[in-house]
Length: 239
Image (cartoon, rainbow, N blue to C red):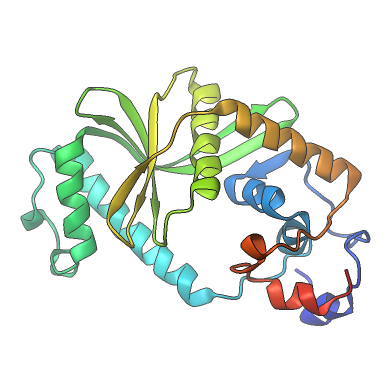
């Protein structure tokens, strides 16, 4: 990846490093969201390899995801109805977020089918990749795709994320998932998200065009920039 001196000396996004070619045929959930949110952010993060800044939040998010994955594996192995807090180790038994999630799962899920599984699929000219947190059946027997969030729920961002995973699974397995949602661990709430594959297909096409044109422009608006990890660097450079 590029050094910090490389980042400080960079003035415009139209001169990518020659030894870091754009992988136009590869796309993940994170890179799609980044390109849709701000082409310049995508350029810094995925073309130059600029490192993440908020390492604590990333580590805390991974810790919570690991804990939830352990719980979901127990729900899959033992069965949702047969899994109780006594099956957890002491660390999880004392975690209120975990207890709230277990209660929610027992009230809303019938069966856990898959936990944290990787999936890839060639969609037209783009290789889609992703890791799905949970595939389950709800109490009505319908398939439901669930993504876990350590932070607050953001409709626009998580709508794109869930529909990306849904499209990827549907195209790969030729099987519809009629229900999906994001479970927020920060406030222990589940948010239903409507299935809309067309919106994702549009973003994938936009991504392909972005990489062809190499037009990594800045999208400087308050709602996009306020929580961007590259905000200070971006605003220290000329437009």
